[in-house]
Image (cartoon, rainbow, N blue to C red; front, side):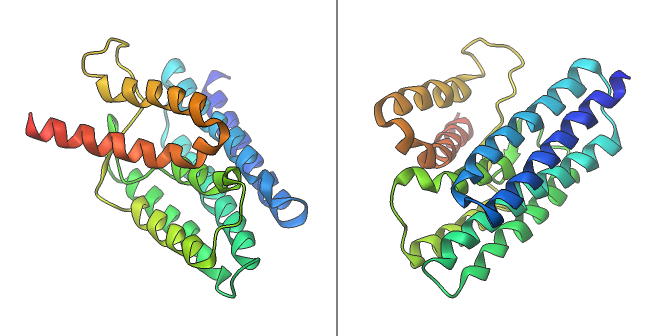
Length: 218
């Protein structure tokens, strides 16, 4: 029975993402962020359960990517498409999100070097950044939204090395960047409240780049 637990959690990720797409298209697209967060929780739990129970499998790996494509590729794509539909006739540009998310996930599945850090922006992080736009409190202009779509899509398949929040120990040494990211995010959230959420992923990218440069110099 325990070997099925991670796949059950992954399936819940997929179900939540699918429900989020339905909700975005039929009810209120501003709730996309909350569906992404809940799907992200299940995405974290399936990997955690697989490692804890030692039941990793190739099927689970493929199922996880399929679920992520729906929850963190298709869902944010439809959300941004709805945003663009309000201000632009080029709303279809948002489909780049799901296309580049698929490329990112396929690349990740073939790359064994991304256990301690990521190459390119992870799809859950990208989905959080895109669907949290609502916390800015105002409608972004057409050019800005299209620019965000293009930039985030390219970040998905970029060569940037980004921090993975996978602790082998909880000490400061060898986890400096992780603790700076976590503690810095807490402080900035306390200062700026919900308006910081759309800036969380850019902050994550900045901390990762600074950390990578520091390591290379060291």
